[in-house]
Image 1 (cartoon, rainbow, N blue to C red):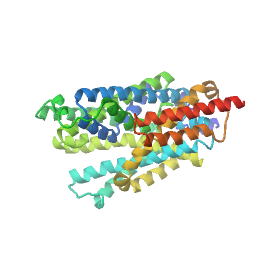
Image 2: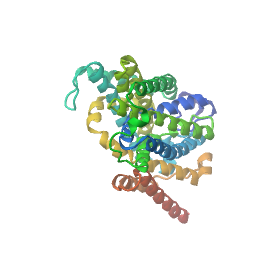
Image 3: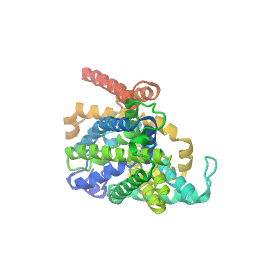
Amino acid sequence: MSKQNQKVDFDYTNGPVDAAGRKSNLSMFMVMLGFTFFSASMWAGQKLAEGLDFSGFIWAILLGGLILGAYTGTLGWIGAESGLTLDMLARRSFGEKGSYLPSAMISFTQIGWFGVGLAMFAIPVAQQIMHLPVTPDYMPWQGYLLVLVAGILMTCSAYFGIKSLTIVSYIAVPAVAILGTVAMIMAVHNGDSTLVEQFSKGTKDLGVIAGAGLVIGSFVSGGTATPNFTRFAKSAKVGLIVTVIAFFLGNSLMFFFGAVSSIYVGGNDIFEVMLNLNLFYVAILVLGLNIWTTNDNALYSSGLGLSNIFGTSKKLMVLIAGVIGTIAAVWLYWNFCGWLNYLNCTLPPIGIVLILSYFCHRKEYLSDTMPRRSVNWAAVLGVVVGAVVANLVQWGIPSINGMAVAAVCFLLGELYYGKKK
């Protein structure tokens, strides 16, 4: 790529981020923390609260957070050191055409979650604030209008790339963290019993290991796209540190929001806690900003993935992905969440292949002398078989099962290709 094109492409879609494109440590922390502010993680917090007492809840978060942090932190290191997007890394590990598989899987799931996020904003606001009847079979026009407005705003901010994502994160992260935490403390203070006592109620039928699995599964798919953002970090060390801290803090906060909502209000979102405290406008603000940060990152990753497949502008692909996600948002919310959870298990095998390929050929990656293949069938097979195992095997933690299988397939392929040289 020419220097002139690199000056125009501030998002470095097809090449490594140079020194001039690197962002401050604070900016990277805000972007990564905003990335983890995922409303669906509150659902996991609700399930943890239903199945674990307070001690088990904490241990599940710590264990799951440690594993999730190790996975995303490693990808954060790779992204920052190489300066490459997930898709550019996949071109080297899966092959030029083989990279279409991970790019398609990332794009498909992230467009899906973008649409679900829009509906997660519009439906509660329509039901709780506007008092409109919303069911899986009926959505009033006001609800669709909310989806449209939110979709346009979020697509526009994702269109302008990393600079816009950083601005949104600087606004949203402090607002969500502070207002959400205050609301959570108010809910506990206004409750009839302490947090520990509330956690002890109900059928506690979830083990710590299973709880840790929920923690990992809540964001391991999105975390696979970590290199798309940490490639702008000043150094590999910074990419690792900001990712681990941001994922642990952000996810833990979301789990607490979901848990407190569940045991004090009966819902699964801090939005419902704020409504219960008569904080209507604050509730809308926090819900919108919370979804906005994750949705922007999802749409940004989708644009990069589709750009890799079709060889077109990332900005154009962001617009197309945003239109698709907005049009399908309500349908996705009511019909596709379960499928998206299944698809989530297909993404961790991609991450482990990227990790193993990078550290097996680190010098070649950094010197840009990595041999280019059309398709690395060992990597492709690893992802396919790993995804099947993750979804079908009931023992253990699904995402880790998938990664283990993918790792074995990829390493066997490395041995085979090595002997042929």
